[in-house]
Image 1 (cartoon, rainbow, N blue to C red):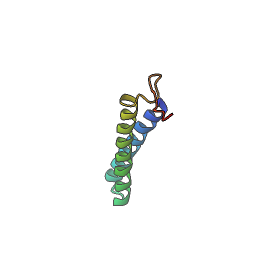
Image 2 (image 1 turned 120 degrees about the horizontal axis):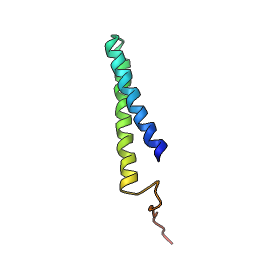
Image 3 (image 1 turned 30 degrees about the vertical axis):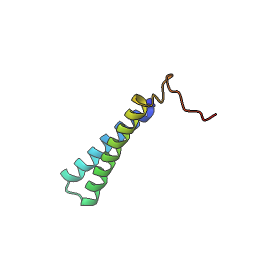
Image 4 (image 1 turned 90 degrees about the vertical axis):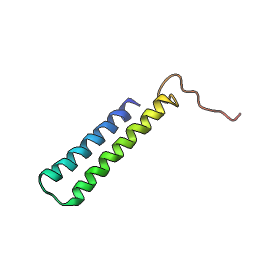
Length: 69
């Protein structure tokens, strides 16, 4: 889970950097949109990883999956 957490953070930072660079260098709006969407995907991924690790305890020794039998 730690690598997924870091990957999510890197995804968000790259998206913000891409949107900021596109805005500063006056690039096409497609690059700004791509950066914003990349940053948003990173934020959503950070939230999902937080839910997985805090609520479901996935990635920890305390995780107990349900069994039907």
